[in-house]
Amino acid sequence: MAILDQALVESRTLRAQHSTRTDVLDRVKALSLLPDNTHATTEIVAGYYEVDTETVKKLVQRNRDELTENGLRVLRGDALREMKQGTAEGQAVPLPGNVNSLTLFTRRTVLNVGQLLTGSPIAERVRRYLLDVEEIAPAELRNAAIERAAISRAQLHMMAAAGPLVRDQVWLDTKARVVIARGLGEEPEIDPADQPLYVPDYLRERGVTAKRDLASIQSWFGRRVAALAEAHGVDLPEKRTSELPNGSLRETLAWTQRHRPLFDEVWDRWYAADYDPPLALAGV
Image 1 (tube, rainbow, N blue to C red):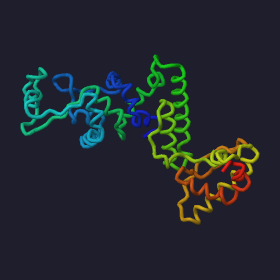
Image 2 (image 1 turned 90 degrees about the vertical axis):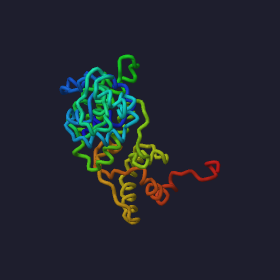
Image 3 (image 1 turned 180 degrees about the vertical axis):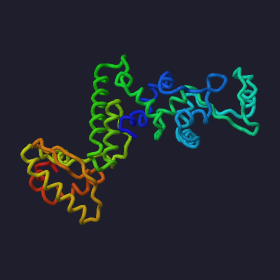
Image 4 (image 1 turned 90 degrees about the horizontal axis):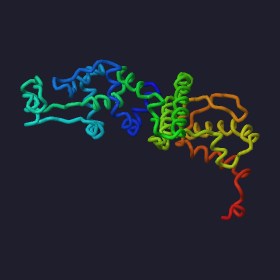
């Protein structure tokens, strides 16, 4: 799945903003409906998105509450008999006699499926229609929100282009979720341990703020963390491209917050004496 598609797949808030944009369905592909011209069955939805029915059924199981809010309903008993006879909806629905239940999707529910469904080129096209900056930030929102969404989209475009250059796909996906959430004004829903951890940021936290000091410490600090990881039997992460304090680029290991104990140990062994204030001065 392309990085840009994650915006709708990851954010229920954003999906809710677009829940009425059912016109997008017909822009992508003609949608067939039951004779009542209002509902679609699981088989119809699967055919529209060109996936098997089990894929749609599993998606419904995982997202039933949200889909129900957007019109999903299951008919059984008298309601199902009325649907077959056309007494409730005005048009009879031809169904096998042994069907005991019928899941019905409105156009709004079909759109909701497209916002959630991965692995379907049709669903990806539906999401692309909804991912324009103007749609992410409607006109009634303040200019600041529009600008934030535009910046987020630009960052995602750059990340999509850089994707083949980043070896650590977990890091790339996590970074994309963070960018998407910030662009929407939301908190990213990711495991805190998967948050990227950059050597320069860690050093700044520890009080190494001078650009000259960062440039001299950063490389050796990273090497020592890697050596300590190997000594402790910790698997090294894949690499990513990072910017050094002097503006140059180099490949560095894609550390995350789960590696922070290694960073702390390196700091305590080699750098704390030079940068951490004595306990008396710190007021302890």
